[in-house]
Every structure is written in C-alpha cells, then in structure tokens.
Image (cartoon, rainbow, N blue to C red; front, side):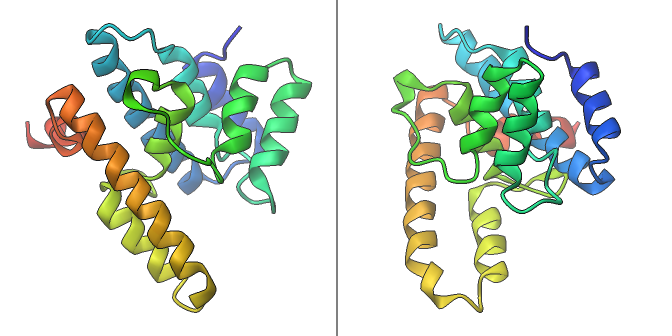
Length: 176
C-alpha cells in the first residue's frame, strides 16, 4: 500500500516537518504528478499515487543531517518500501533514466530539482539557487555544473517527448 495524500500530509504534521518544508514537498509532489499524468497520456504506467506520496514525504526529515536516510528508514520501519526507495536516493540520484524508461523516482527527483521552496521555478533558476548556496564551496562547482548539464539534457528530452515545456505544463494554472 502506498500512502494517500491525506495520510502523507498527516505524517508530515505528526513528524514535525516545518511548514516551509511541507510547502516545498507539496510543490515537488505536484510536479511529479503533473508530469506523470502527461506521460500516462502517452502510454506510460506511472504510479501517480506513489509520485505524490514520495514527493510529499521526500523531505519529511529535512531538519536532520542525511535527511533522506532518516526518512527512508522511518518509512521502511512503517512498511512503505516503495516510498523509501525513492526518498533514499533523491539527494544523490546518479542519473535520470532515458525518457522511455522514466519512472516515479525520476519524476520525484525532477520535481525536487525544479522547485525552490513552494514554487516551481524550472531547472535554470533552481540551479542558480544551488550555485548561490554553494558560492563558498568552489570544490563543488564542477559537480554542480555536471549535474546541471544532465538535468537540462533530461528536461529537453522530456519536453520534446511530451510536446510541451515544463513551464507550459506547470505554470498553466498560474495564468488562468
């Protein structure tokens, strides 16, 4: 069983996840679900409930060092291995799958890499935010540049496949 949205939100509250982190988690889940819906329209079989639950819970333990491991262990202890598998890798996801093999982990990690706080901002603004946070860490610049390149490549392939940009998909409600 995968947590429902209501159950995941209750867990965030009971776990003591700060409100601003919950806002971010909601934004990440929204991205994962919306992109998953578009992929499903193209014949994929993305588990939208898993995207939503893992997106909502991915930063539940954000106040701890190694928060992804803390959250994944908590979820495993409560019998939620599928959510735990995604959350365990979201900080150091090695590489996105090719578009035709895109899965729920890809979508949650995508969501995390295109949102700042509770807003979708796209990969460019998100990476600028990360670069700014790491400006005193020149040792990380090459790694971050590489990750940015991988992310932009994945997003371009995804947008080409979907026939719509992430901005069009994720900002459409903001313009109505």
